[in-house]
Image (tube, rainbow, N blue to C red; front, side, top):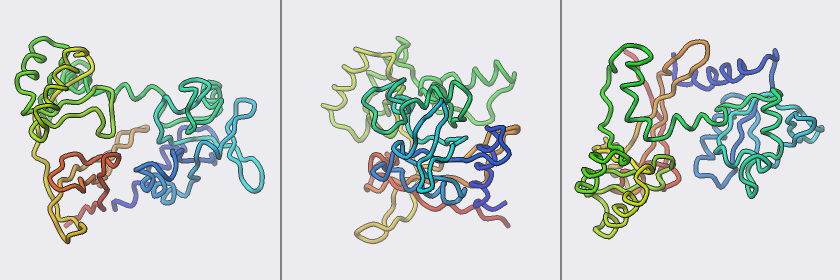
Length: 279
């Protein structure tokens, strides 16, 4: 199966979230100033669905409509690419300019399907990572095929002591942060940054985890000075509908700054085409 089948499979999964025979699907993006906007527009284009901002949508009678040149058109499914707290200023952050007033009420009424559903981000809390082997064992009675990266929970006294003593060797992360924010890469950081994070951990240990610094692979990358080696991170796509399917393709994030291990687009990283070749 070619990698290009991914958008079609994602679209079918989104359509299955709605009971309508031909649901109207949209990708909800924060807009052109978001660092991952290219990915949002690419997915919408490949799926043949609408790419919408919060200002494009309006809620009436607990239903979500897209404003078009031909009037209002109801949206049945939204693949959202904005955080929970910005989704609806009436339900979450009142100062959000990205979301849609009333969207959460429409969702609770069952008039629109949201992927991912609000609240699913709890599974992305970095502290959960440390418990994954136990979760697999408990629910499946199996041992993981691939070992976890060792993860130190700063809420645990033994782990916290180790992290504070070896912070210059570790990557420290906020448990609920994303996009490369709230992170310290120990080997690349200064003594002042080490001391700062030690205090942050001591003051709020529950908010931090730490892991060994991994040696990411590098690939040739076109830079302003010609080709150069840049670190990359391969992120597979897994579709979960009636069945779980690992798509033979992926998103490859690349750190565009020389020597950087941070590949997040919000921190100056970029994306690379990913090819899966079959013999």
